[in-house]
Length: 152
Image (cartoon, rainbow, N blue to C red):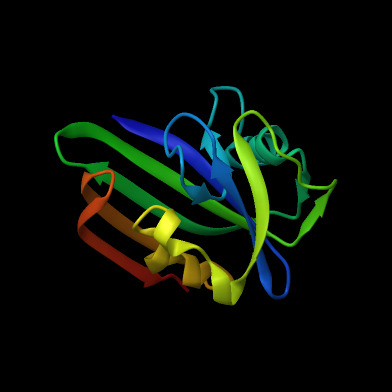
């Protein structure tokens, strides 16, 4: 079964805003802001809602930059993640029950404390290139296969 999710990556000219996940799926990892899409919202609306819920910011001018299909060994579910990026937001990022936001320079992204696949696709976001990819995990820390391509 496909599960539709979003991920919003906020950047400026030299930095990326990530959140330390405090609970639930991905706990203990730095990530963008996102989650499940409800039945009554678009993927864009879900990305906006999640950024508000997880970092207390209102994102604007979202640009869909990527689509990743994640699968896990011995799990029939496919996580289809719509990746958005923006440099426009209002409000000051604040810690919430779910996430603790922090800015990182592009040269200091904490890949060792992120999902293992992030090092393969996040450079596309930083370079503002649209992309698509597939990642198959053995478990939460081990990638069996991954493939990403720029989409023109």
